[in-house]
Structures are given as structure tokens and as C-alpha cells.
Length: 273
Image (cartoon, rainbow, N blue to C red):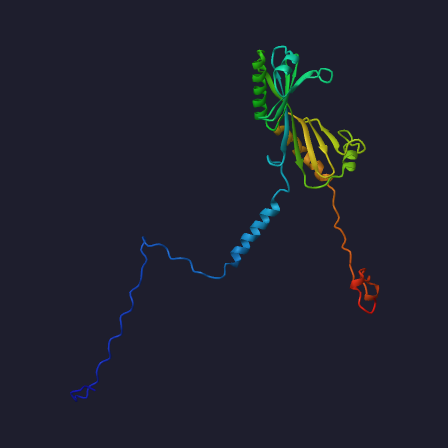
């Protein structure tokens, strides 16, 4: 009712206007994704993909870090005759004994190598781990010979042999291997504990031991050794020695009547002393 007494009814207030609609412009960044806790499905998929990748991985491959170079041997022609006695008397760390060996044995420390200098002018250098160090050592030996009074020429440098080692991480049945590959392998455990396997192509010699360690020799580069080992790897896997698990021994406690008494007299009770 109105306060003036007219007896009329006051009208109802108008309804509030609806809130304005928020529209996202092109310049605004997209809203962040909802933080749901149902991410277990995606994580499970990632774990399954990792497991599949591990299962599809090859068991073992020949890489640069698997075969390690131990020694390199090279030959050099100095193109002049060498007076071995004069060379041995004029240089340090050299020895010459014609009754035992008809060459001068020279040694240097950096790189730690040894050279065999023959009277004909041929020189053999050994002891370096890489062909680069071997070439550097041969140059140093040539400079030492030049200081003595000779005029050598550095000609015909060539790597003749590379010795490398590898570990297969499993034991090998050498008796079965030499029986199956008698044409290429020889094994005399009374004379030498390793099996000698001579590969024709590529030309390489393997010394195989029961522990799985292998010595490679005869190749003139590491690439030749890797190619030979990749060819020899299936043979090693075929004759892998399967180690059976050791049985567990059940240990039970002895009854008190069978247990040994203490040997010390002071440890016995007073009634038994």
C-alpha cells in the first residue's frame, strides 16, 4: 500500500540485467588446460613405450668404446745404412748387443715407444696406442738419428699391426668351439690357455679365453678389427656358456644338547667349573 492512503499496490522492481558475455579476443593467450588427476593413462603409455624400446634394443654392438687399442707397430725405411755401434754409443737409452739381436734398441719417453734400428736402414717402432702417436714417435727417432751424424730420409711409413682387446662379458665354451671350427681354430690348454682363431677375410687372429676376454691382432687398422669382430660375434654367442644358479643350502639351528660348549674355563657356569 502507498503511504498516501490511496490503497494502490506498488509495482515490483525490474529484474537485474544479465551479466555481459565474455568473449576472448585473438590477442589473448589460450586458457590453461584443466588440472585433472586422470593423467595415469598417459604416464602408463609412456612407460609402455619405454619398455618396448628397451625390448627392441640390440643385445650388443661393436662400437668404438668396446674394442680398445693396446699397441701399434709400424715400419719406416731410412734409405741409408746405419752404423749400429756408433748410434748406440752416441745416444742415450739405447742398447746394442749383436750377439743377441742385430739391431739397436732405442727408447723415448714422450710418447713412450721403442724403436729397432737395423744396419740396413730399416726401423720398426712399437709401443704407441694410436697411429698418430706412432707417426710422431717415428719422426722423433729420425731426428735423434740425424743429430748423431747420419742423413736419414723418412720414407715408407706404414702401420703393420694393431693389437686390441675386448671383453664379451660372458664365458665361452672353448672345447665346443674348437670342435665345430677345427679348420680355423686351435686349442692346446696344456701349452696356452687361450684358443687361437685365424680368420681369413678380413685377415685377423683372435685369442679367445674362457673368461670372455679376447685379444685381436693381425689387422692394420681399427676398422679392420671391428669388421672382423662383427663377423666373429655370432660364433661367440653360439658357444656362450650358460651358468646355472647356485642352490641355496638350508641352515638349521642345532638343538641345545648338540651345541658346543664354550672352550674358555671362565665362560662356564660356576656349577660346571
